[in-house]
Structure formats: C-alpha cells, structure tokens
Image (cartoon, rainbow, N blue to C red):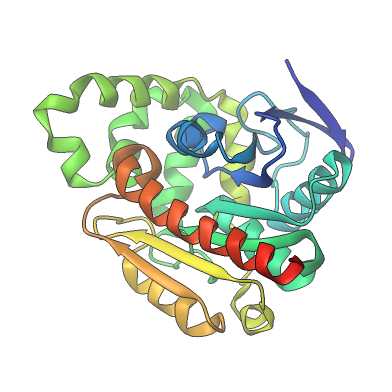
Length: 275
C-alpha cells in the first residue's frame, strides 16, 4: 500500500505514473481516492494522475487531534506535491478538496499549473447547517455512520442519482463505502464544520481556474459556485444540468467532458509558451 510520510503524518496515495503533466486529485469529506476513479480512468492516458486520502480519512493515518483543520490539510497537500516532485501540477479539489485547492492557489501558485474547484465554497459552513451537522457528527462518533447513512446520502448525492431505478447497484456501493468510515471520522468532520473562510484570499488567485457545480447539489448550492466565479479573476464556471455533491461519480461523463476540455486547453497553452 503506497504511503507517503509528510508533515508528521502518513498519507495513502495512488499514482498512475507516466510522462504526462501531473494532476493531483483531492477528495471530499467522508470519501477517498475512489471518488475520482472515473476521472483517473478517463485521463490517465495523457496525464499522470495522483489521488490521495486526506489525513483522518480513507487509508491515511488518523491524528489524535479533535479537529483536523483546513490549514493542516493545506500543508499536507504542499508537502505531498513537493515530496513527489510533481509541482507545478493541475489540482482538482471537490468540496473539502476545494478548500485545500483554494489555499494552494492563493498562497503557493508556484506549485500549480491550474485549479479545478468542484462542489465547494470559499465561505465558512453556513450557521444554519452547523447544528444539524454537529448532531450527525456526534451520532457518528458514538454509534458509527450506519444510523445516519440515509441522511448523509441525501446530502452527498442529487435527486437524479438517488431516484434512478437503474442505479440501485451504484447507490448500494456508495452507501457501503460511506459506512466504511471509522468512528474517528468525527475529527475530519469537525474540520469542515469549524473551517475558516478563504474567500478574502480568492482575488489573489492567478492560476487558470475552472469551477464546476451540479444543479442538484444541496450541500454546496450553485450560488456558492457563482460567488467563487466572481471572486477568482478570470475563472470559468460550468453548471452541470444534473449532479449533486458527488458529481464525479453521479455524472462522470459530464464531469470528464468539462475536465478534459479545460485541462487539455491548459496543456496546449503551456506547450505554446514553452515552444
């Protein structure tokens, strides 16, 4: 199992290798590298694809702290990119991964070729959500994810995916993956609930940026993506006609098309600058 020692922890990662420009994939809360399987499969022929599990999630090490904060996760990403020697890279972040990507782009633009932000926000968790998420997190800590699995599925996935009778097997797979989370996932959830705003730093971002949101995302509504597009100079916004908070697996063809078009354009521009 490939593990990388960085920033005082051990991170699990998967690397397709190859000579293509590197893409680093950073997943959302409660998931793992598996969230990007459709994108890695689609892009690995022309890019070096690297996906990793955040500390406290997936197969990475779990710290003893009660809050795995975004600043620590940002420093983990810096250390991972530097230790693997893949900077400057394309960075794709969904939800929590987007919180990290925005910090990278604003503070360490030397490490990035481009930034893709999916289903994410530059603001703190809305106050209206905090009591509900805090209760769900307490239940997870005391009894595991199973008692709250139905509620979390409705947060993580859009109505099209949840209601399609032909996708029952996929829903069962992702529900099973959700319940694979250990009880100590509460440390990572606290980091999202208690996160600080990154919005004031977004006007400093100068790397090419694509923002993607599904119209059915109830966790980070499309208005949040609109706000990001207003704050990040020159960014491009794509609103998918379907897809919730996990559009990479709900609508992989739509996501892959948006990603491929954007990344290939950046690669061509980079080649023309160096040619």
